[in-house]
Length: 118
Image (cartoon, rainbow, N blue to C red; front, side, top):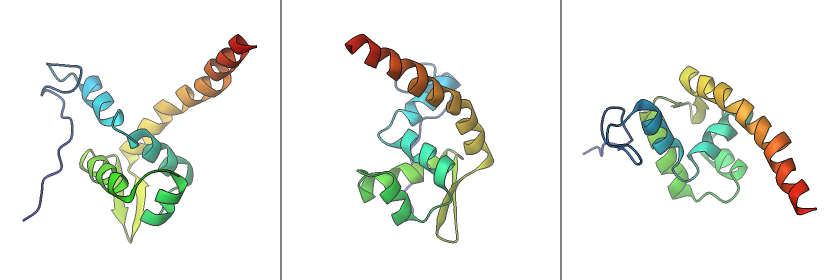
C-alpha cells in the first residue's frame, strides 16, 4: 500500500491561511524545515544523487531529506530519474524568483545587520 504524500494545497486551509490562498500554500510548503535549502541546493548544484544532496545540505538527516524530496516531488518542484534529484522546470522557475531574494539577503540585509553591530 502506497502512502500518499501530504502537501499544502491551494484552496484548502494551510498554515497561516484558512482560505488556502496559493501563495500561502506555497509558503507553507517552503517553510517546512529544509525545503528551501533543498530547492536552493538543487538549483545551484543539481542534479544530485541522494547522498551528495545530503552532503551539500550539511546537517540534514536522511529522514528529513527523504520527506522533503517526497513533498517537493508531489508539489511538482523536484523530479527523480536515474538516481538523481533535480528541479523540474517549475522548480527552476521558482528558484529564479527566489534568486534576487538571496542576493538581497547577502548584499543588503546581512550587511545592514553587521553594520548595526559595529
